[in-house]
Image (cartoon, rainbow, N blue to C red; front, side, top):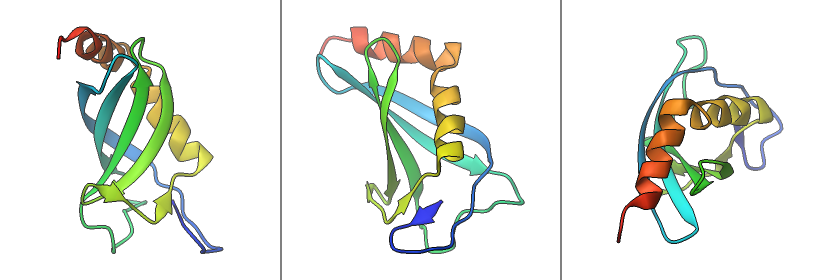
Amino acid sequence: MIRYGDELWTELKFAGFHYKAERRDDQWVDVMLKVETSDETPLPLDLIDFAIMAICTHEGHPIQLVTLDEGCDCEYQLTEWEKDQVNEFIRSEEVREAIILAASAIE
C-alpha cells in the first residue's frame, strides 16, 4: 500500500476476502471487501477498520477500487499488484454471480 505523499511503500499479499455485493443503481454494484492479509504483510498500524469498495458493472466487471478506513476514503492507495489480487477475486465465478444477483434486485 502507498500512503499519499510517502516515498516508501509496501505491498500486501491478501490471504482472503469477505465480501458483500449491493446494487447501487441501474449502472453500478458496490462490492464491499474486508481483507485478510498474509502474516508477512500486515496492514499499516494506523488503519482501524480497513475495507475496499469495488465499484462494478452489473455484469461483474470491476471499474474502480476505493480504499476505506472506518467507512471513509483513506490516505492509502493500492499498488498495481494489490489491485490485480482484488480484481482477480472480483472476477471469480462466485463473486461475479453475487454481483449479477445483486444487480437484478429490485430497489
